[in-house]
Length: 359
Image (cartoon, rainbow, N blue to C red; front, side):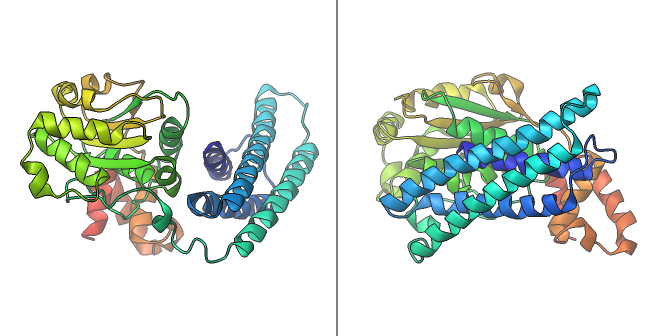
């Protein structure tokens, strides 16, 4: 899990340097292209291959994951050290040393990439569809099923890394992770992207997604959770049970297993007070993600992730990614009006996505 977060972090650092109008350091373009290509390849490997395979191939993948984390952290250290030295006016690391250091790490990553390709060749056909090898059940009901489409997460990269780190990292006790921000800011999109990552699907034994909203019903919340985690249950049978019976079934179903539950769009602390004791803390590293517009609700968990408005540049980038493949694909004659549309969305990702869906 640490390797995946490290890859995302290094890609983000490289991207920020490339996009910065006056970057503190200069990276050789050939190295950037080589690194980016390798990082994308290794990220795909961690997302897909870690979700299946034989025990022997799984052990080999674990070793590679450790090597990927070490190499990625080393590359990040070299770049960040050079940036700090440049800011402080030091000469401890020359441009040549930066180039040579990255060149060696690119070579190391090349060896890792080669080993990954060998493992994939030896186990061809084992993982045609990684979703078939996960323990996640089919989500039950429309209200408990997040869209399978991964929305663009422009401007949310850092938050996505932070969410995934909180989901897979320490401590091992049950952890509540609030995501707070105004309506349309992208809370659900952020949670959905983390929830649907193959790495997260593989990490948890059980996952459940429940949309709460203002007019909540405790019985329905418990039913939606059970429909997610128990394939053999039917809504008709569950509806005949009271809250106590449903809550006991939820507690027993979750006990002894590592679970992830997303309670999307909670409007009051009262909702949490009525359902929280059904979620056992059994030291398995389970997580509960809460999305909310209200700061007092966010206070029920650990330090929350607060989502802010997108700036004009990021808003424009998001609009382009939803209409075109990338910003460069936008016809020049449409750029001015497009940027006005993005600006009028006031930094709200949901407004931009809705605008592009009807464009």
